[in-house]
Length: 223
Image 1 (cartoon, rainbow, N blue to C red):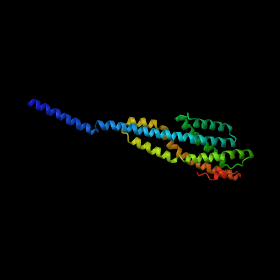
Image 2: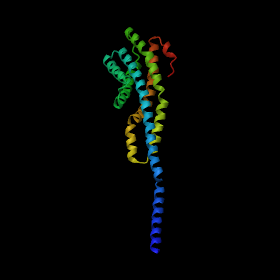
Image 3: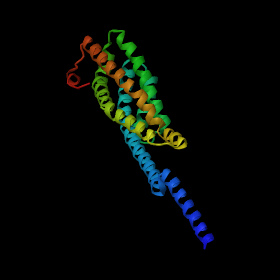
Image 4: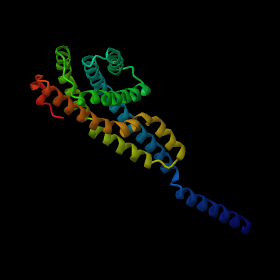
């Protein structure tokens, strides 16, 4: 009898210890729930990234197409062709993550190139006036459309950071960072690009007015 009671005491002791340790880890429900919570969080942020990328591709398509018109007005047909090709890829729906990053960089480089020419204040020829006239409104509209991504990008970055902070497993953090690589690239680079585009749009308007182009259809577009 004594042996039986002693064995029973040991079993109960081990059971209590195991239960206490398991509760310290959160218990089976907490472990499973935590995993499901992490998976749900990752699913939400991945969906948010997909939506942002879809909007960004649409906007970049418009900006690049407008930049192609400006390149044509500046006599750079080769640049115009490259811009149109990338714009079509953005609008075509088959652009991958590397294409998106490349389009952001191409847009940025083109803004700087075209801005330098516009800032030079060279007098427009009659032919270039007509071409700049075709480019003005599409460009201003595209830039205004790009500016509307400012808040969605900030919201995505905040959501991504919160999702990463909620995960304690380093492997899961690295995995999520890898899947969000393009979104985080956009969050770092596109807000600066939006500012640069806004400045270039104002410079283009000034340049157009100096050359007595009709800017009435672009004057009311809110940048």
